[in-house]
Image 1 (spheres, rainbow, N blue to C red):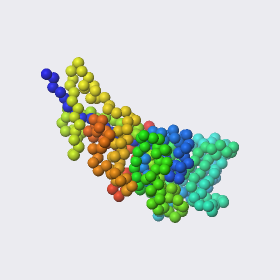
Image 2: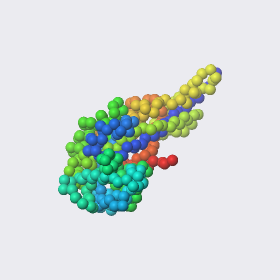
Image 3: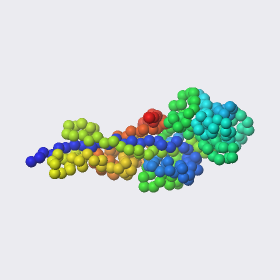
Amino acid sequence: MTECSQGIKNIQIHARCAYPIVTAYEFEFLKSEAEVQAILQPCTIYIIAQRPLTYFHNLRSADGLLTFDIADRSSSGPLKCVFDPRLNGFAADDDELLVDIQFYRSQADESEPFNYVAGIQLRRLDGDFLFWLTPQKFIHHVLTERLKASIDGDILKYINYKVHYIGQAFSQEIWNRLTGHEKMQAILTKEWTLDSNATMSSLEISLILLDISGFDEANIFPLLNLGLSENVDPIIHEFDFKDDNESFEKYCLPKLRVDAAELTNEVEAMLVNTFKPLYNIIKFSNYPNIANGTRSAGYTKSSLVLESLPAILSTDEFTQNVILPTMA
């Protein structure tokens, strides 16, 4: 008689912030753009957060360069920035560019330096659109090395967000899920602006969108209490090494696909249980014992690796520090 072996399976889920953090106001206009939807389509986890209004100050254009400060209402010193559109491929060295500026206030500056600037549009002389920059998009793209620019100052003071709510959008596209979202509307209604220059809370309430990019498995056998945690009951898999069956091969096979709902359910529950955001009524206090999570697929323990999160997220319960992508 062949003796059966026993093992467990653990899973490490990878997620990333693939799209720059946007305000609720910006998202209302961006969500219908086909190019934006193509990027957001894989995102199944969303975080509704808030930080003080951030704006461009002392914006000037000279010798092909844009120089500006990034500032907010806090006592933190501004970020001193220099951005060369041509160095970043938006125009040839001898090409002229149009710089369109949008302001947070109705009484806009009519000449340099421009202050309280909400966003900058780069266009060709014929008017064709090239690129749109907000302070947070600029910071995100520099941190993730999508833009080459100079930033002098404590950048960590400008990427700190208070988390209000964490949710998922697996069964529908994330832009549809967030349209008329009950919690979003509650947050926009109840949360005061942190900066008096923000005439609407939607200018400060922001969306951080995560997509699950993959996972790694750990198949642990023989079972010697390795890979186990306190208060987590092991899910035992039995197999043998007989030539006439495939029990060991089946044990080693992944139990989920990367687009499986169980992964999204697991990440949502894990994050909510960790951060305990105010607007999440269900805090998943029984985590990891949740319905339709990775344990239901046969994994004893799950962990989360954030591959890119160029922001500091916090509640009264937990703070997640900035995580920058690893560049090849």
